Length: 143
Image (cartoon, rainbow, N blue to C red; front, side, top):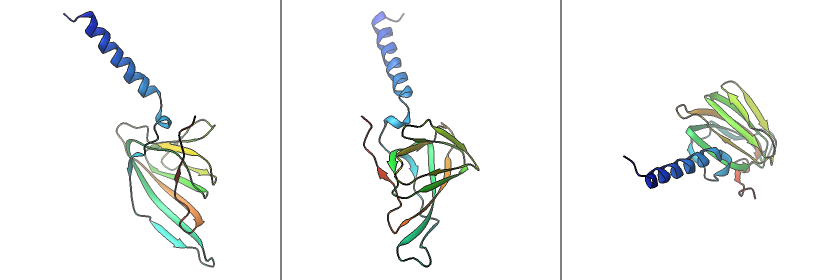
């Protein structure tokens, strides 16, 4: 038979785990589960000296997350497979499925993650920006 003190310890540990799960993905500021791929396209736009178009294929393992960040340029996300959640600061989360897209204006602080525990999330990122200035910039934790 289990002692009361052991039951209390197990219960406290279980409550701690549940609290961490309820905290949500935006609390952590560590990018994890993101599988890098080389750009599908990255070239200077014809007729310009310094504008670049880039298309990235991005893949998140189950539970993968890219915490709060921004892009100095507008970005369009297109989900190829799986389901992903995008959340702009101050707005409710948006869930996107394969075939759906989302436009995020330049400078918008947002995060995105793969809520699945079994399936990968694959999406494309379309960016037009000054050469070398389209990728993400991490944002500090909200206070």
